[in-house]
Image 1 (tube, protein in one colour):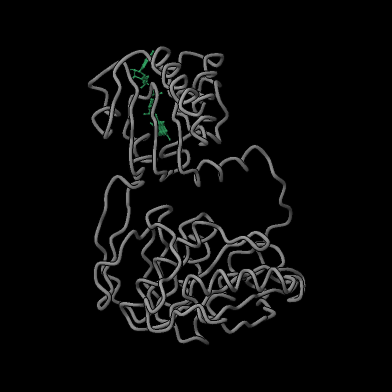
Image 2 (cartoon, rainbow, N blue to C red):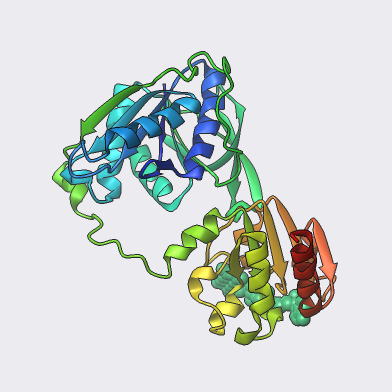
Length: 341
Ligand SMILES: Cc1cc2nc3c(=O)[nH]c(=O)nc-3n(C[C@H](O)[C@H](O)[C@H](O)COP(=O)(O)OP(=O)(O)OC[C@H]3O[C@@H](n4cnc5c(N)ncnc54)[C@H](O)[C@@H]3O)c2cc1C
């Protein structure tokens, strides 16, 4: 069985977890095995996830090919604690005799799986995008912020993988796609995890949304509009923000923009900001320094708007519009408004 860690919010499964499940199902099909899903941190008691939310989550997981679902709760994992969560995940993987453990490459997924890999004495490949061979397991994975793909052989008895955000299209299983996926009601377990005190030395004490909360919106966005020094000043963002709105996306900016105090740091994309993998990245007035590209190269399509045809952002883009962004963006916005009536 392949064990997949899912991140949920109530009865909703994070899209990146559905992507990880889709990736895992393809691998399970190739290896002729089944899928088990683990959800950790459901509350002080295992009853805190009510039956309707549990049923709804289990149905979603079944649609994605899971045959087993384990909800793990209890006071020790009521609040996030990477080591205790990893121990709970490892318990499931061991009991299910999993030789592969998978999560999405979110900050928490990556942190937990790093802990899990040590406990399982496993090789870990972060940010996988594709399985190249089932046995021996070889994956293609993003490195250098997505600017390079490397093939990695994971030749250990247990393999631990994270799946890069938006590298895989989340898709429910087709009937008969793999031996065990069949949308039958999966077997559901509720388990209380008692943590080793050593695993609780570092645990989350308080969770308070701040402007940082927007970082999740940026890293998960399907469309990101990037803005750089070329915008010209803190008061010059109206057109860019309207484009963000019209495209239903998120704003990402360069480090110059945050250093100058034009926009807050949580909006920064790059080596020292967020790494994004949207379907579309529209980079406006950004030169495309290597540190910026490290955060956006895994975008599926890049469109650059820049007055310099030789800017690295332009040469790294699939499409470019050369000219003054203060003329181009209002024209694009007007056309988008017109098409929407
Ligand atoms: C250790 C380290 C870490 C770093 N981390 C990051 C990071 O995480 N993210 C990041 O972004 N940078 C990072 N940087 C900084 C990076 O090297 C660049 O300095 C920065 O990305 C440049 O920002 P920019 O493209 O907005 O500005 P510039 O390089 O000044 O480029 C502005 C661009 O706008 C274009 N332009 C100007 N006016 C217009 C106009 N009217 N219309 C259209 N185009 C116009 C210009 O042609 C130019 O291409 C880091 C640097 C270091 C040393």
